[in-house]
Image (tube, rainbow, N blue to C red; front, top):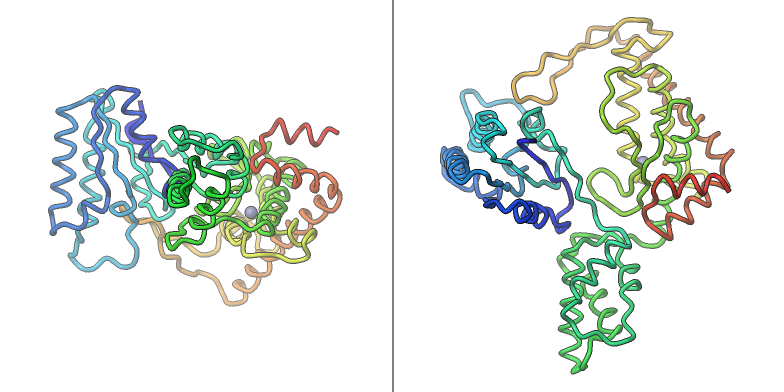
Length: 412
Ligand code: ZN
């Protein structure tokens, strides 16, 4: 049994509900606390609270502890450590790590936590035996949104002209909580208008109100943006399917997730590999460039949507040149040295052990790798332009497509 499960997703996607549902299904007690509650307290109190929470949980085991906003305590230590200073959050985090290491799974305490910012979490939290299980709680797709709307309107009296599919189609990018809000708002508008039943116009007004509202945390994509994201993601998939070592594309989605990117292309297997060959890394680079290249070739311009791809590609190319000896010009040497990571540290400082001239060669070699990948992506997308358009059309219609649907498209 896992000790820790981390639910990753935007606010309002139902992470707390999911954790509650797990405890309901398992018929065990549910301890619910928010990460921010630990750190508002005086020095030393946060750690004591963690201790107490686990003590109580153990007494009530089997049970589930749910920590919302884990990032409030679990943020990685940034910047230099002040001499002798252990801040409150750090003590609380250390206590949490100690508690999680301190019991084995036979005790029957499962710790679930939620965050919408997994990238800021201290790596120590994600190690084996802690939150080593991560589950992405996605924003709902079209079909999901229809189901969610059905649920929230179940107790309402709806007029015959209500088409929840239309409501769902108008709200890509919104989460369950937003949809609940829309249903509620539509009911209020109907009552104010003295309608006997909730009419479609009430829903339309509710959507406009929620979308324009001050608490617009989840933005809806404009049709143009949606089209661009579809081209971008279809581009990644086309390249992934055509490079020799590309992993099969499992799922493509253009629902904005806001965590790393707008849409995403999920390739299997997602487990980390132990070894990668030079060819595999080069294919990976081409896949990463595929999104941006598809935008450029079809829409004539690139967008900010590829930032994360470029960052990843730069990292891979830099590693290939500096640490993996995969540049002919620079040979099988490593350039630059990472200092050993200290406890709880995520990024060591790097120091340079090469000349300015070498630095310039490193830069040109990295750029050459990425440029090469870009050209490969350009060729694949140009050669398969028709398929790309088909894929985009299907994506715009369904928002999410799986492997079977994509293969069917590639066949005819
Ligand atoms: Zn991308």
